[in-house]
Image 1 (cartoon, helix red, strand yellow):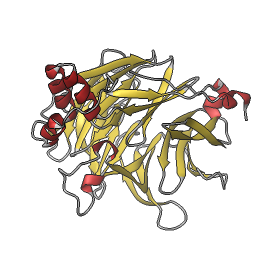
Image 2 (image 1 turned 90 degrees about the vertical axis):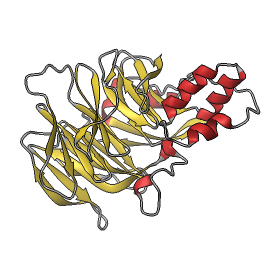
Image 3 (image 1 turned 120 degrees about the horizontal axis):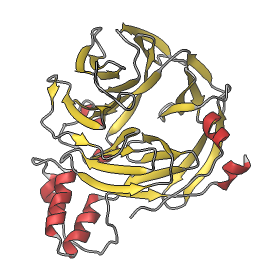
Image 4 (image 1 turned 60 degrees about the vertical axis):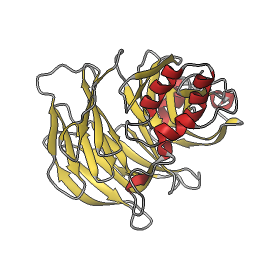
Length: 357
């Protein structure tokens, strides 16, 4: 069951305007302000650093830092960039936290005040020691990065020729997968996952899991996306891919199985995660997707006598050795819930965007 919250906007708005709004599950989305990018070019990627109240975006090679508090015009951090990413850290990786203690796994990620920016045949790492971001390391590469990811100590890089991995305290990158001479329909795409894994995409919609710590393919099945893939994102324990045609496919990380397929108004343009929710944008709308709690889904299936489906749901959400398989399955069913699918969509219409308010 997927409700849908559309935010209309014109094509010009979509290209040059970042809209800041609060997502409130009870009341929908509330528009709190707009951030204009001076050059009016198409914004191709946006990331948020909530701890700093900063939005980072790239348009026409310019990486912008914009204040979410709307109290300053922002500035261009660097020019002639091909892409960028922020530094993600899994909360199970922070000191004093056990790797198995993930009570809120779907939100178990923080974003550090660090950026990785891709330029011609190199990447530059930025940190914020004071009031401004400053470069602190430059790493040369053999080709220009087209995609980037930075989680914990690992940076992954996708170029037109190969996928690379690099520890952020070293200077030499290691090849994961060569793309030379192989047909790709879209730019190389990658998605960093917990436990030192990366999902790489670039060969005919095929997703391959790779273990960065061992530098070997993971013991997981590959994922064959059924449509031409545009972008992927993660909302644990799911991987979500979108196609320009409007198709959204939800796969389980643990079982690599297709859990849900649904459609949003085409054409879709991008997907981004906030840790426990996903934002899917099109030319005319923004949709917020959030997982329905697995306990509620299991209770619903057990009340209907669908034990097999409940076990499949457990496998999709938890690994074979995860103790929550037992705890979630054995909780008593105390109420009836009308929830069927792993994701639910929140939809709110903001007609003020079209009016230019």
